Amino acid sequence: MLRAKYTVGIQDAEDRGSDCWGSGNFGASRGSRTHNGKDVLVPAGSNFFSVSSGDVTKFGYCYRGEGYRYVEITDREGNRVRHFYIKPNISLMIGDRIGMGALIGTSQDLACKYQADECHSEDMPNHVHIEVMSGLDSKVFFDPDEYEFT
Ligand SMILES: [Zn+2]
Image 1 (cartoon, rainbow, N blue to C red):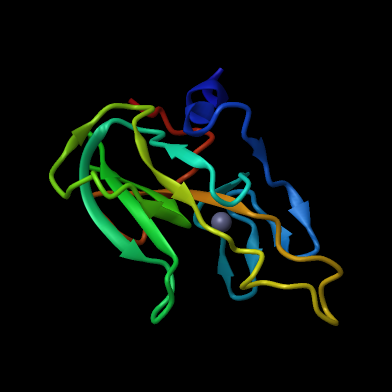
Image 2: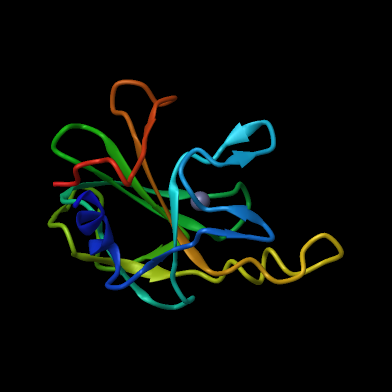
C-alpha cells in the first residue's frame, strides 16, 4: 500500500483531514489556489523524520518575514520533497545525503499563528505539510499519497 511509505515521516502520523480551517488533503481548495501538499497531524516540538532519501538542498521560509521553515530534500528522481513547519536540525547541512527516516528537525507551532477567531471555532491543528514539487516544472506537484518515495 502506497500510504505505508508516506507514514515514514512520523510513526502513526494521522491525516489532518478536514477542520474549520479547511482540508489537509492534496488538491483541496485554498480559495483561488489549491493545496499543493498533504498535511499530517504532528504536535509542536516533535522530532520529524524525512519521508524521502536524497540530498538536503534547501532550508526555506514558509512565509516572508516569519520564522516558519521548511526542509527540502531532492530525491534521486530530481524531485523536491519539502517538509513544512520544521525547524531544521542544526547538524543538518546543505549538501548532506540522508536516508528516508533521518531526523531533519522539530515541528513548529502553527496554532499560535492561526488562532481561533470569529471565523474559526478552534486553533488550526498543528501539522506538518509535505509537498513534492517536480524537478522539471516548479508548478507541478505530485500527490504525496500516490508518490513512490525512495
Ligand atoms: Zn498543507
